[in-house]
Image (tube, rainbow, N blue to C red):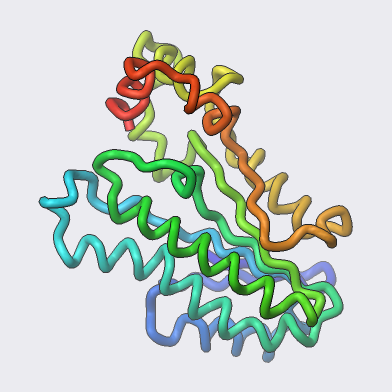
Amino acid sequence: MAAFGASSAIRALRQDVTAGDAADTLVGTIQSELDGLDILVNNAGVPGDLGPIEETSDASWARVFSVNVDAVFRISRACIPLLRESAYGRIITTSSVNVDFGLRRYGPYVASKHAVSGLMKGLPIELGRNGITVNCINPANVVTGMTRSGFPAPNTAEGRAYLDAATVLNRSCQQEEVVSAAVFLASDGGAYITGQAIVVDGGMTCRLPSLSERAIREIQRVT
């Protein structure tokens, strides 16, 4: 689901971001129904089938990259001309804390997030002269419809052990907290931030180097 604002109006467009015409459809809708494009948020993503890399099929690998990387590339490429016409160009892409460390059974996902983060490192260099900022948000432990079944319930012993090992705030991240990071990057306050990543992880990445091997195994066991 993609939503675009023009004045007080909102236009929602539901589509498969991996479709061959997805980027053209998006740009066509913007050009025909809205005043232009100021902010692009690439947020669609899939974890893929979990399992060891030797059991990962070509189809599963391709599916993860088609959503997490290829769609971001194609939609960003298509929207750049519109953003150049704006006085307020922003590209914000959801990546993951997994750009900083690996995770067993998530090989395609981790690789795809490294790829999209790399793309977002090159774009700001190309687009800075146009006043367009490009940044990532790297979240962890976000409770969504996609991840909810993968996390142990926080009110169980397993859930408490996981949160204690994975965060310093001892709770899961809520969707609104990731949205707040995107709103900041899209605001005037984020105007001089580009080529960066805002990490929304409850302290996971600052704590990982000091975690015991047992605690790391606990994180990996339940993810």
